[in-house]
Image 1 (spheres, helix red, strand yellow):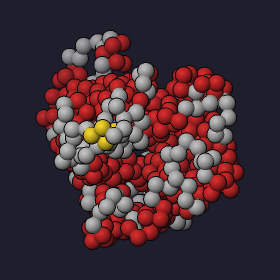
Image 2: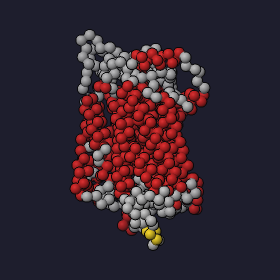
Image 3: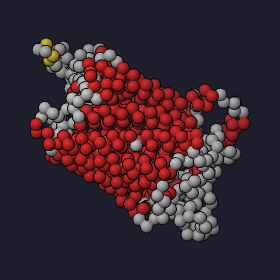
Image 4: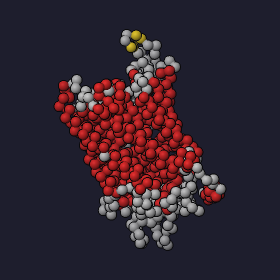
Length: 595
């Protein structure tokens, strides 16, 4: 390790003066790359949320002229009435953007980049060049995904899961043509970006920890980012293979996912393929993807709850074990998305068993958060509120997962709004809360300034009320049988009574969406005009707060500090302050805690 540090010190001495392009555009500094991921992910998030609000307005007031549709959708909303085809395209691109481009990149891309070197005591990532390449691949894939909306025949419109045959036959519908091709190209580039990033994170954590930073002294954030990267390396190549095989079916006449297709009485030449094979390949990534999104949010929450409870995290080793158990189990439960695909009932029971097992490590995390909060000296800043909000949505969304994970119960609510409510709460809202918590907590470290706390409180409370206002009623309209992805339900008298509920859901969605402008104003205004941050504003133990407020290449001036204790020595008897940094040596006779 000292050789590594000396090399970097020598490198710093002879470091050439950076230009605007090398510092802000083609930067190899992990802190700048984290900011690039965050700002790109935020812009994609605005696009994704606007799409969801248009979908909600269409469901609440179907076939009514809408000036917003006319302005934003153009030919897809003649006289302000949304075209049926574009609704499914909005569903597809909204889901893709939020799952991959906002939550995966916004959490892993931003916080793994920012925190891994700082919290383990490294000068930078193992490969700054690969790190830069991974960001630019992500940026290019984002641009291609957005550009697919401007294809004449329309963007991809097969749902974010892009099941064949809609996605495999370019002639199936407008959105199956060039828009679908751009979707596949964008995702292939995104997967390359994720794999480069994940390999970098794993190598950095294994090889570049400072002296004294054993694996059992790592903050839970680093454990979460490390295990998330491992899951990504295992599962993303499977989605890449599915995308490549789909491209071959579309463009080269193969039949991996197609068999016995008839269009207008004409028999197509495909035979021998299986669309269910695509489902297996997609969900082998699709379910671990839930935890690629969730684990970083849970790691961030662990750090913030311990810091703002002024208590050691409860059950550190159990928390690490639960992260590892979730990682393993998440790769063997993908079949619970396919209970109605004609799956053998015995195989369905196997997937039910493994799915219900994952509730155990998830419950360990939830109970340990609650126990850490219990009798703590709670500091209720916006980051803490969003972390507690995550625990709430993780529990409420997780409980409905038990119903959907049971093959006999799932059949009744499969492809209804019950499923939409479940995964938006447990994955979407929980991960967004983790992302917001991380931004409020580490904003001073990223930008050297503080966010406005009062605007943070407004942002949290309106978002929290509206999130439950949107997704809680969806469970009930789902149990009433309302199918998802339908652009209007007016053709079904059975669902007329549910229309008022849909209007209420949409009003909550519009209010919640509008109040994200408060966050955006706070974020961008504080970058330039926020109150200047002190070195350790939250009086936290982890190593990132020992670096100077002003960013320097290499993080620490001079030698990297050594680590002498774990990350959670809060309110430890025998110390004047209620926190003890990891770099403070143990006193004579002091025991190192390991819960």
